[in-house]
Image (tube, rainbow over all chains, first blue to last red; front, side, top):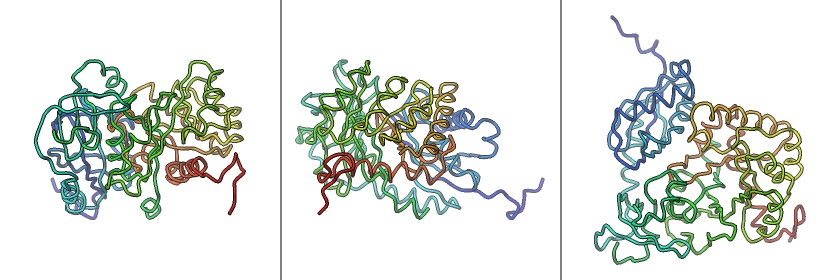
Length: 184
Length: 239
């Protein structure tokens, strides 16, 4: 079986994306959710036209292949994903390229450099922290930290209605909200 | 694509911590990373617990990023709505009415002091020609909320898409201002401007219209409400 010569192949685009999630997401789960999202949004016919494939995915970045004339639709499918197996996620397209190499170099590698910029020095590490919003103190445990962004699991069950309202597990705050700066 | 790169994008309906799970600064940082030029943090609380001092305005990373505060009014009875709107006008920058119910939609579009009618398709019902004409006369912007397409699946999303398609038809016919908002309740609901455009294209909006709804119309609403020279609707002090 011969493969098609390059001139006859369907033209493609490569979307570099990043995944923000409450927990680690496996490659298998992401592919399943992408297929499901595409099937519910555009159906079988649309799926075949988009020809979306997950080429690489590790940690939180990945590259997605799609048909060249269906980039907007593919973006829409990726944007319509809100959770994977009950874990809240967000897929953000970083950029679109014509080759895998260009999308890796222009979007994925640059992204690492950009996010590692420190805003404030940390003096000590601690799991517990407290912050004030509208004169209410909320204390909790730090679940995850990514530079300035912190996810917090509140200690008291009093705040569950707020989390339920948002459909998330954790409070999302930043280092700038934390009142006791010595702890941080 | 050149136009997309030069445009300034605004998301005018984002809910922060006193009501939902994310702090204002977290949402602001995430929105800035996504390429927005400004957001409006709207609170459900009518006494406006979201004050300017809670806002992370002083952060060095947030130069040239605009943060506005607003109220999303949700009341049970229509009679209360007019009162609330007149009370809040002037106290807060942007007034949004949480619609969905037909009576509520009607009360919102017939009140010239309202800026945006948010999620009018929440119950899966579109606007009609009477409401559309009122919205056009009073300059109330009709919102297309993308969280409905993100969070819902199946028949409920199908209904919302159908309703949005009809709203879009009315918006085109009567020339109503329209905005696209995320109606985000956490940073997981935020979508970057291009993704909002991509989602809007699923119910027939063109790229230019979506661009207009994300940048030009919100800018107009902001200018109208923060301009200290304006005295009332259509009257303004000129130098």
